[in-house]
Image (tube, rainbow, N blue to C red; front, side):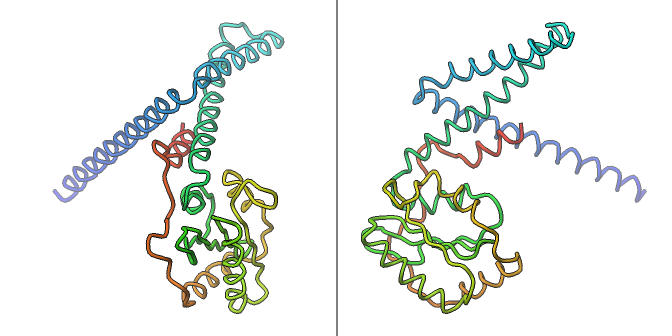
Length: 250
């Protein structure tokens, strides 16, 4: 009897798991469709570019197939599949560009980008320092060391960065400390290039050292963020993390 009950329970669990997975896939498709509709309304070139990508990819695959002796009607389905995959990548890239264009210059945009789109194991603490003008400094800890990201008016952000860098240097010792100012002027890093910039930094410390640094700096008493300090905006209709994850899973 015990075995029968166990088998029945196992079947119910599998059924529930399949239902949950089905619901998740449906939700993911819904998110992608919503993102597509919003992007289509704002980006008039999206559909023509996606269609062109599919056609060109299919033509190339068929052409290669004919060269190696494969009939076009066998090669065409593969070409359409490859073209559809490339079109989805194009869609995700254009959505991402649109999101960053909207977020650029918005208070808290750097914190949003770091918390939602930075890949890998990073320790992110938004707004460790700030001003009443919504300038802010965010702290990122990772394999490169400590990265301080400032956003706002440069003449106000630079003193904040210098102050935080001096304060943190007393705790981290020889660990490298980088500082970045978000902006589009000379010597600044555009918002859309912030995450790639961090990913390209050299790996100076071990994963264990990252954990230790995070613990030590979290324990460090510092100035609390100002009231109303932005925690990071999410531009309307721009659930990029969900969209990108959906594209990768397809």
